[in-house]
Length: 91
Image (tube, rainbow, N blue to C red; front, side, top):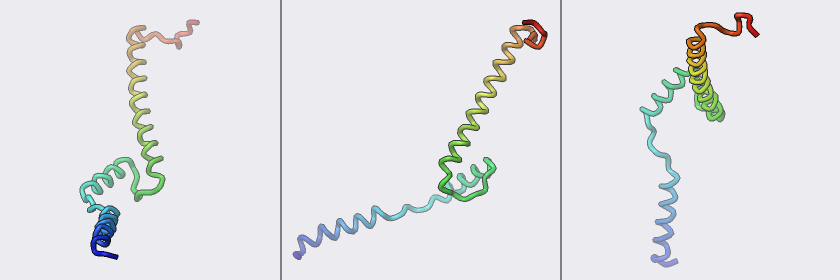
């Protein structure tokens, strides 16, 4: 094999090795992720179920927003009806 053929092959092999290398760890990102996990009540390491757990966390957050909106709507309805509700016995 000639030198002209070996050089591109060596460059290609080196670029593959560089592309497959891991990036430097982010200590601030790790600390933030750990703090978030503790805030959410999880003290586990990263697992294959993290996507599912994150989905459940987002669902809980949406549920809180929905329940707040329901509470506000109930208060507005009570204010419009002067506190009278279906419990007064009227059909």
